[in-house]
Image: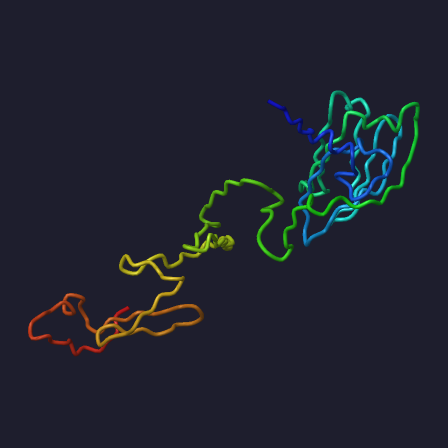
Length: 237
């Protein structure tokens, strides 16, 4: 039975400019790359500089120019993978250097190459900058959030959404404040009361409410005989 040989991806990259859109003279310098960018931006390999045993790769990204510094001593083995981060710690993407990445710099102490070649567009995963949440407090990836009395979360059924609710702490006051009325707590910080024939409500100065009972004895108000209403109109606070 005949055996069909299949070229490995490492060999295929040696035959073209991948992951760049065109060649610059050393196809084995980079053998793979991937990026996460906003609004369909495609990164550009601007330059490569060798200085003091450090290789500096300059990339144009959606946040501007980012420089990746790699010590030449790290280029050991078949390949080298380096992740790229911006100044906020956001991961921009990954570069994979080939086994012969330093062949262009043999017997060189300092060297600078201006390249200015874009990467292949399909290597950049695009995210709309005005749609969705891509970080929380500068953190990315899988996050675990814990609520408390000042921050809590509500899931939106059927929409895969979360509502964040935040409440600032109030100023500390030595004055007593209303917690409940007859064991009933306020709803949305509001309490609605209506006076009756037996209970009168009136304001008494700024932010003060005065309650008055009609009758001289509280026991008189609880009388059930013939639903008699006490006629003594002297307010008792």
